[in-house]
Image 1 (tube, rainbow, N blue to C red):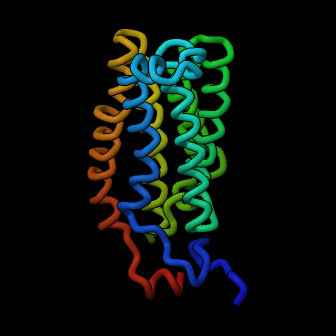
Image 2: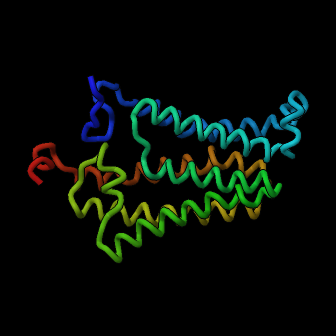
Image 3: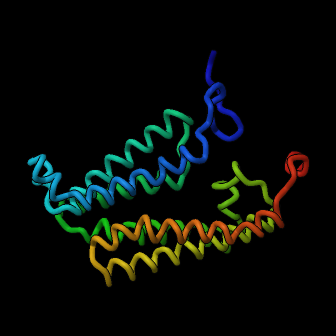
Length: 217
C-alpha cells in the first residue's frame, strides 16, 4: 500500500503526533540545553572528549544541536513533514551553534534567538503589509480555520510578538549571566509565548469558521 499525503501533510495510514508529543519534541531540545549547561562541568570530567569543546555553555550548545537534529528526524519519521518554522530554527541552530563551537564565542548562540525572531517578524509583517498576505494562514491552517480578517489579525500580532521576543532576548543576554539566559529560554520565553497564545483565543473564537463554511469558502 503506497503512502499518500493527506490534506494536512500527514501520511495516510500513519497516526499523526498528538499535541503532547509535538510539545515534547519542541521543548525537549531546550531541556537538554539547560541540563547540559547545568551539568557541563561534571560531563567534562566524566567524558574528556567533551572537555575539548570548552566550557559548559559550549558543551550545552553541542548537545542542543544534537537534540534539535533528533527532534527534527523524529518529526519527519512520524509525520513525513516538517513545518517551516522548526526547519528554519533547526538550520539557524546548526549555523550559529557551529560558529559558537568553532570560534569559541558564546555570543553567536546568544544572538541566535534575536536573529531568528527578527527574521520571522520581518517575514510575517512584510508579507502582510506589502503583499496583503497573512502568513499565519499557511503556518496555522491545519489546527485552525479562520476568515481572512482573523488571519490578518493573527499575523499582525504574531509578527509584533516575534520582535518582542527578540528584544527580550537582547535585554536578558546583555544584562544577566549566561546561566540565567539559558534557564530563561524555558522558564521565561516559553511562559511568555504560552500567555500570548492564550490572549489570541478571542480572535480564534470570533473569526473561526465552521467546517461547512470552510468547505464552501
